[in-house]
Amino acid sequence: MKRAGCLLFAAAPLVITAAVYLFTPESSAPDTPGSRVSASQQARQDAKARAEAERAADEKVIAEAPPGLAAPDKKELAQKLVASAENSTLDWRTAYGYIEDIGDGQGYTAGIIGFCTGTHDLLTLVEHYTKAHPGNGLADYLPALREVDGTDSHEGLDPGFTKAWRAEAKVPAFREAQDTERDRVYFDPAVRLAKLDGLGPLGQFVYYDAMVFHGPGTGANSFYGLRERAMQEASLPSEGGSEKSYLDIFLDIRRKAMKSRKAGIDTTRIDTAQRRFLYDGNLDLRTPLVWRVYGETFRVP
Image 1: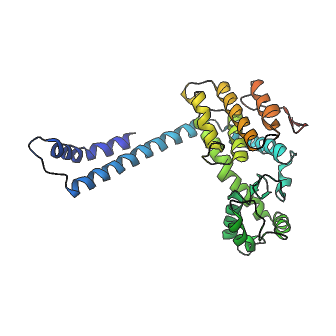
Image 2: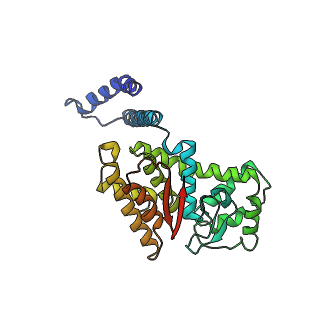
Image 3: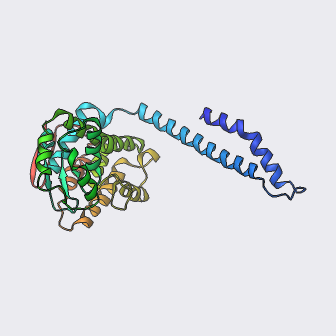
């Protein structure tokens, strides 16, 4: 904040000069190009200073917050929880080679977090991986992946892409690339924002799972759209609201969004997992945990 204040103070003479010129009754001359440019530059400098101050304040909050879901044991737990809903297993590392079209209109779903050929994240993963490892087994499919991005088409991918994906998933560098992209796009942003919103480990996981399923977009049924609607109905814990009440409303809104995608969709990842933890008062996501997804019971001691 001190830095921002210094910037504003240093620019004050310029602003005062412009104000006197524009509003002194004796002067009726129009603005000069120079004065308008200076005012525009000042506005940009002020906006930049405010953004830097806000970013610094956010970093301070993050630095002072407990590790939460980012702690190694909690992050491992988070991957197990997601895998139980995405792949019906707790052994999430077996999903690196997973790939199939599940009929949801997003093309092929693949890997540890459900990267999709129709939602850009799978394309980005392969692009980043190919930049670091040219000549890999998926590189030849990049033109086709760019063509089908945003659609459910398999054009240019069949019949060899699924076999190539499974083969590449045996390569340690590609498994590491999946981990990196998962963290960059989903895990790290979700945990960071949840901490700024005043949420503990359970709330951080609720954000993470929602971002995985709905995508990190701003549409009404994407993650940021869901959060915006929840904030209209309940105060964030960081603003003095109840953490339990806010999460309950967020899960209500998310459940409706899932139903709007497909009326008969299974919502047990909310109903008998996240909601159960919430109603048990387990905001710290303490183990042991027991939950049910798709009728199957999972346990973490």
